[in-house]
Image (cartoon, rainbow, N blue to C red):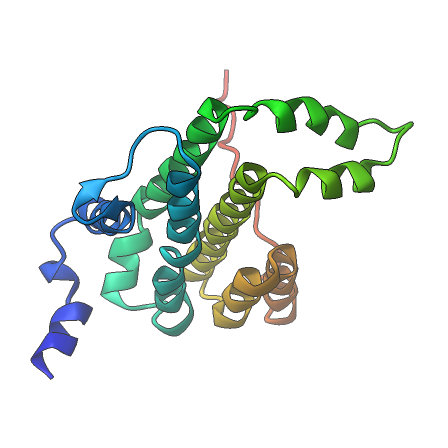
Length: 200
């Protein structure tokens, strides 16, 4: 109906930043009061924001890759920036928690080649703040890469819905699938994006 067409009309969207930021604000509120400060509840709420806020945006990249609304949402980095801010909130709030810096000290063991890095990583998963940070970290970068795949497809005329979907599900294999699609369709791998050096 009318509301459906209004949703798909990119000219009726005032601002991508405002839309995403408003959604984050709603999800980071409790009874109309914004959750601030250092508390397990605020980290738990931010975890939910980091989990559920990105999901509707994936739908645009997967099912409406060429639509005007998708190009408006992902032409810039506003959506990704909002998710980065949610992640930063989790990190900052975790540091303020009692014992919040403990995972930082233990994280060194993950990079100790003489120890057991996998066991060290598993041990850090007992910290809710670390789990929340890592989860929001992964979901934000997955969407960042999904956007890059979509953008490369728009620029070079490559079908990307399957690759973006796989990026959402299991991350890096989605990028590999995109490159495979580029090669199979004769588009080749993405050329270097480094600007040419000006001639002296």
